[in-house]
Image (cartoon, rainbow, N blue to C red; front, side, top):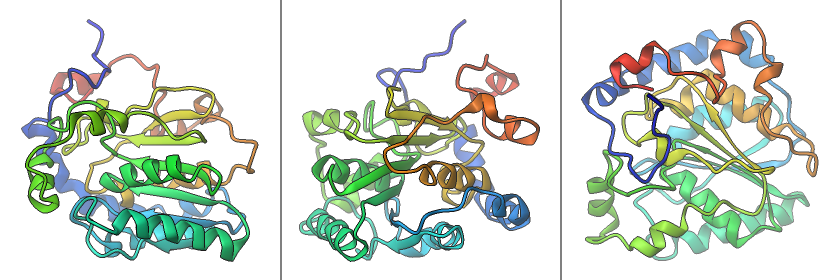
Length: 270
């Protein structure tokens, strides 16, 4: 029986996936152990990369990612807006101003990387500033489907002060930015239904599946490698992630989205 990959019918991850979020610390440990592997990730060209944290999180949660990007040769920046409590007054405007500032300082376009709700920020800012942004990469970002297809929607309502979510505004989030966009997602995400992180694939948009928890995705070695791979492409020469080019361990780390359902389907993780 084919799996439903549409976000329209997706529901919040169940208790098994939610319990698997406890593996996040092990993903950080895996990144430390995978240092030799990560040193082989494509090197950067020094262009600026602005990193956005997830819901209720701050820049401390993206420190590992930013250190990794700096080690690969990028100018990695934190968002510097405190904890991410949703679109509070002035936050989006400050982010837009930051992108413009970095563009002016470096003399080149800025790449945006966003984790969870931070990925929604990255996509929306890129839509507002298509001439200032180079690429957008999101990790477990809930940009399609129902806002209730996550285990964090009540928390969002609480911290953002939104009792009712604007359906029309939320539906508009599904539209991809008019520039190269990559969505990194995990079928075992315990917070966001993975279908809600699936991008409509075109010549300038793609999806990359990794084995990761939601809380540990920004610490996960395969996700970090994928980010470096996407950022390293020359500006104006972006191509979609080539699964066929990977052999050996990389073939298992980066699953082809055309794969048939595997053993994980027995546990409801496919």
